[in-house]
Length: 250
Image (cartoon, rainbow, N blue to C red):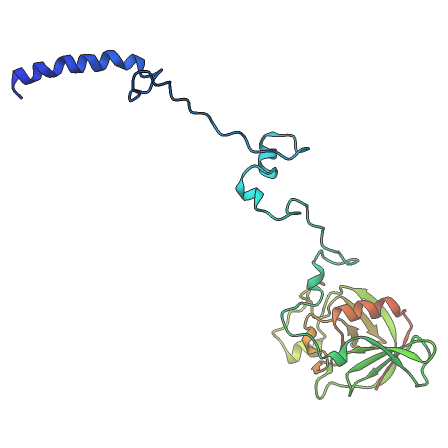
């Protein structure tokens, strides 16, 4: 750069340095006589009362468009899931898992007329038609849809309920393990247990009236001789039946 041109830039540079001290008060691009530019922060968003302010107020108040867009009731704590007696905590929807289509309507629990000879409190199992009856007073009975033994595993006889258990553990009999050696030798009670939510043990046999984690099998011949109900139905039946109740399997 020519020396003469360099000398012409020095006064300009010095003037710029001298004016830098005023830039902190007035924007350098403001024209003479223009009032200083003042930048103010937006007002804080309104807060919901009773939350104490601060970070909690920010999280759960109406501070911001995302919170404002939430539907009414969003901030309410959900109700805890129901817990059945002596059972692992689980949502009610897990009692009869909704992964498969519901059962045929004819197998839903209902009250029907009963004209048989058995006394009230007796359980009558109609194996061929996949129904279990709990005899009531005044010529009535509660009828439940059931799953029964597959071909070669059905049976008949008269016994009594000897034991009742809620969310029972499952220990497959020796004979079952010989037929199906891949089965576990023990399974704790719970929603994945094949005995379901309740079990009523029949006499001294290995058979039970129990719930099922496969409710879609009701109305079919599927078991190794046990009588299975939907969990919602076996819970209902369990509450009505006493130890010592007569069981007639046909």
